[in-house]
Length: 258
DNA sequence: ATGGTGGCTGGGCCA
Image 1 (tube, rainbow, N blue to C red):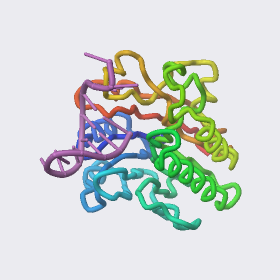
Image 2 (spheres, rainbow, N blue to C red; image 1 turned 120 degrees about the vertical axis):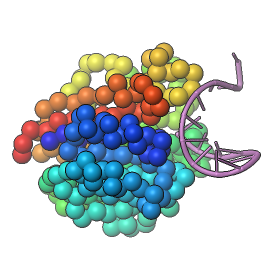
Image 3 (cartoon, protein in one colour; image 1 turned 60 degrees about the horizontal axis):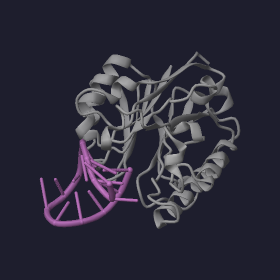
Image 4 (tube, rainbow, N blue to C red; image 1 turned 180 degrees about the horizontal axis):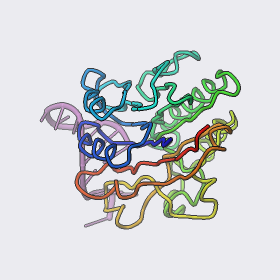
């Protein structure tokens, strides 16, 4: 079973790339972020034609998340509503796929340390922790998406360039640690313990991709039973190349049969 | 070089 996550930076603009990628890679589950569309505009039929079910939680111009699955898509939940105060934006959708409770998450960017949007980011991360804490113990879980946090200094191209910036602050990393402390592991880092320059995002601006100026901010956090099944993990850098790419590459994990 | 590019829109915001 292959589970992937991809921030597509507009599903409307990226649909040809996404459908081609599904045909090439044939993942079992694909979590999308930044669809930037309403539910009414979500092109579900494009995925049905390829043998997938799809669920989307969108708001329009910004944000928007989806899960596409060919191993079942049940008990879909939008937002944080089951655990208390909901978000006012469309940044998390959760469903049961192939025996795993899978969330597709788009964590707020934060803009600047101390900015209202940064406080919102920390609030959001805490709401995710609270939500995960309410899951029944032992639920096979994957939280996949764009976390907008580089877990370690080596997850950005040059930490000196990030002095005082978002994505690397102690508060953001502590909030990420709290999410992991609910029992989740960054299986990509576990599989590549000593390799650097394994990025998932390169800004459109300034030719950052070609300059190697990337960040590892997209990942799949897995509960122990899922983490124990991991067969391979990789970033599909090729998807960042070519015509009209997203600024993020897909991250994939392969799981052995349960 | 406090820029750059891309996508939403229909001027300016967001990343």
